Image (cartoon, rainbow, N blue to C red; front, side, top):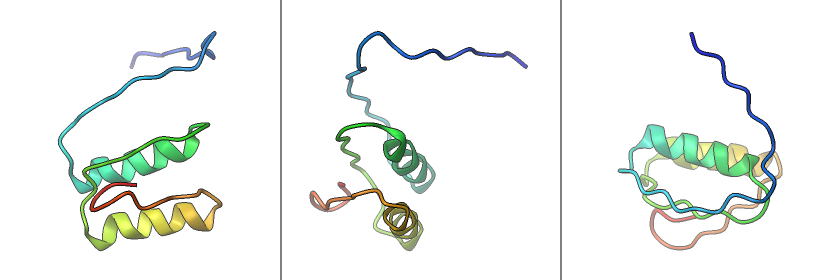
Length: 73
């Protein structure tokens, strides 16, 4: 197993990442977005109950999630 040491950056990271959508990636994207400061857009979410329940759990813990259109928050 390889160990990694992660240290805070000197400046905020800004980038765009595009990967094919599926429900497993959707869950992870919602969870990672909740850890970020500022605004983050997630698109390509499935319309299924799995991601909807992950979203509801994130909102129940205080994250604000706005609808931006089908599969986008």
